[in-house]
Image (cartoon, rainbow, N blue to C red; front, side, top):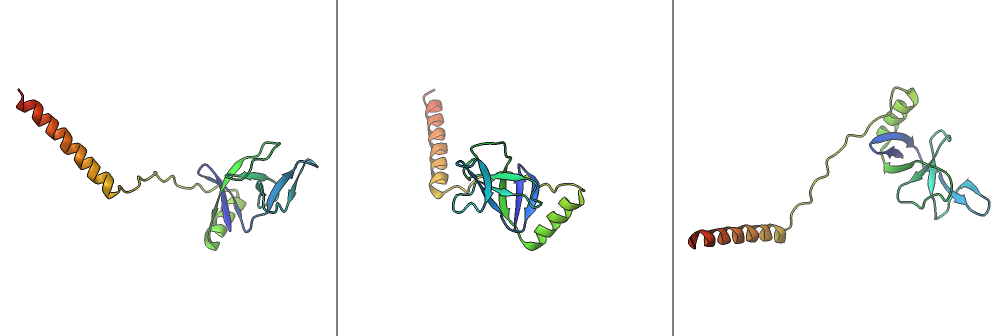
Length: 127
């Protein structure tokens, strides 16, 4: 099960993915994209979305969604909210966290700090 979202707004919840692909030779989008999907069909079949990271559609305007795998409880919670029309669930924005510093980075910062202190001390000693 998956949720599809644009930015931080959930736009769909899908029990399974129905992948699609644009066929240049005949100029149509068809289900069953094989190993080269470009998008998915919405839950109700009324919308086609391009999926971020997949090849772009060569023609047409399709909103790009991100997909995230979800559990059964979250799927039914989102489906209920979307089907009721009471509002689309919004994902909380999570601030990007800095990666923890490596030992080498911490030591380099300490060396830089000590170097600055030595240079400052040398300036005062020469006065």
